[in-house]
Picture 1 (cartoon, rainbow, N blue to C red):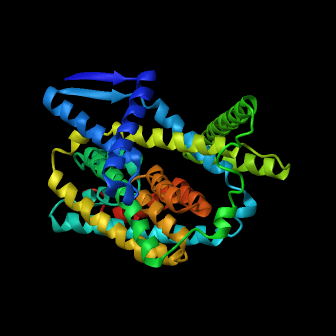
Picture 2 (cartoon, rainbow, N blue to C red):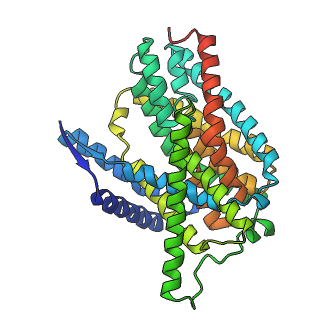
Picture 3 (cartoon, rainbow, N blue to C red):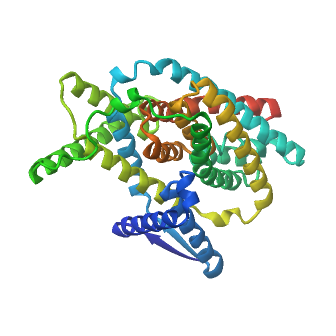
Length: 402
C-alpha cells in the first residue's frame, strides 16, 4: 500500500478548495441550505468519500498533516471566549446546571441503548458501550483511549469499532442538528429576542469611512489577542499537566479569552467586532472541513450493517431527546432551539460539530450568545467527566469486557 502525506500549504489550499465545493453544492441543492447543513460538512464528507474510493481502488492512502486543524479549533474557541462578557452571562448559571444534568441523563440512555442492542445481537455487551457514549458522545479521542484499554482486556477490535461509530456519529451529528433546530423554530414560531440581538451592539462590518490603516490595525490587534489566548491556554495546560490535571486545549484557550475580554471590558477597551467575527468563521470552517476530509471511511467496510443500525438507533434517540427533553428543559425559546441543535452535534459527534450546527442556525435566524457558551463548556469539561464515571459504572454492571 502506498501512503501520500499532504502537509504545509497544500493542506490549506486543498481544504479551502473542498470548502468551495461544499458551498457550490449547497447552493445548487436547496434542501441542504433549507436544513442548515454546514458547507464544511457537505464538502468534507464528499471528499472523504473520494479518498475512500482511491484507497479501495488504487490501494493508496492519503493522509493529512492535522496541525492546522488543531490550531484552528484553539483559535475558534478563543473567539468564542472573546464574546463572553460576564455582565451578559449572569443568567446562564441555572441553564448551565440544567444542561449538565440533562447531558448526564442522555449519556446513561445512550449506553443503555448501546448495551441493549449488543445484548440483543448476542455479542459482548462491552461492544455496546462503544456503540454508546464511548464513541458517540466521547468522539474519536475517547473511543481510541477506551479502545486500547478494552483490547488489552480482551475485547478484540474495540478501537476500530469505536472509530467506526465516532466517524458515523460525526456525520450524523452534522446532518441532523440543523433540521432539529429548524423543526423547533418553525413549529413554535421562534425568533431571536431583542435582548439577544442587542448583546452584539458593534457592527459586523467595518464602517466604510475607516482608513486602510485603521482596518489593518483592528485586524492585527485581533490576531495578536487570539495568539495570546492560544498561548496562555497552552501555558495553563502545561502547568496543570505537571500537577496531574489534564484539560482540553480549546477549553483553556477559551477560558483565557473569557478572562482577557472581561479585563478589557472593565477598562472600557474594545476589540474589532468585524475582525473577531471573520476569525471565528474562518477558523471554524477550516477545522470542520479538514476534520471531515481526513476521515478514513474504508474502516467501515467490515461490520457495516450492525454499525449503521446502531448509529440509526442512536440518531433517533438523539432527535427525540433533543426535541422533547433538551428543548423543554432549557426554556422552550429560541435559544433552547439553538442549544438543542448544538446538543445533537455534541452527543453524536463532537463539540465542534455542535458549534457548527449552532453557527449555521444563528447565521440564518439570529444570534444566541448563551448557546455558544453553554454547549462548549458542557462538551469540553462536564461531559468528559460524567462520561468517564458513567462508563465505569456500566463496566461494573456488565462485568468489565469479559
